[in-house]
Length: 318
Image 1 (cartoon, rainbow, N blue to C red):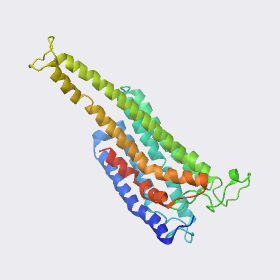
Image 2 (spheres, rainbow, N blue to C red; image 1 turned 30 degrees about the vertical axis):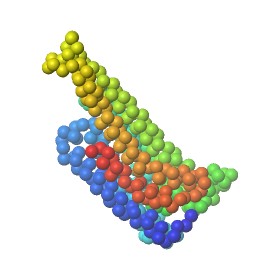
Image 3 (cartoon, rainbow, N blue to C red; image 1 turned 180 degrees about the vertical axis):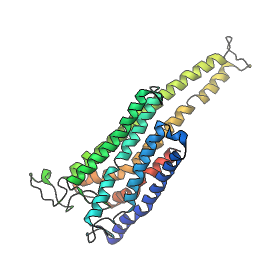
């Protein structure tokens, strides 16, 4: 639907602020890793570095907002570009699917290290690291090139991405096999196949990996506390320093769960970073796909939060 001039301005202006914030967040992570040789030798930090580089690139294009959209496009605030600039923006925003896939890779890394006790320098970790890099980068590159070849990269209201021209066309899948689009036939299918499907698969995988990681930390912590209690409590029910067994048990319960709570809280913030970043965008595209409508409050949240994933991740990881 056509928004008022004020609404269009809000949708276009917000990414000019949130995008640069994300650039700063990504840059801080990149500098933090590159300046520390010890971190560069760690698989975790190499994954984090690659993810932040992808994030930096995507945030740059989000921060341009509507400027790359071809000049004269109706119902868009301040379109100043050409078809070429729009295609470039859409290409690199689609490449941004690498970021949530790298998030899933980081969650899997935690799972392998903590639950399965893999060593950083073991041959299988070396092989696995290559896969953890290859999957996000190959998928992002392949889907971006496919979108380019299928002429899917067009004006998508807030910025250029996978969209049909005109936006009101239905595409051949919904029009008895007749393509009524000038460009981007069946763009809604490719949005879900290339981006939102893999995105939420990555979120689900990350969530499961975090839960499994927390469970093994909790179990290990309970076993450690039990062994410590056995050493502290004397055969007669007291302790080496005169404490009663009940006092030792009380202290054990206070200690018990401290690390597991830290892991659980970290996992919670990690997943909240995902949800804050991607729920408004997913809801907007789902409503568009099913009912052919958009709701201004949701799409405004999309304009604000979608570029901010690096900021949320930076907060959640510190």
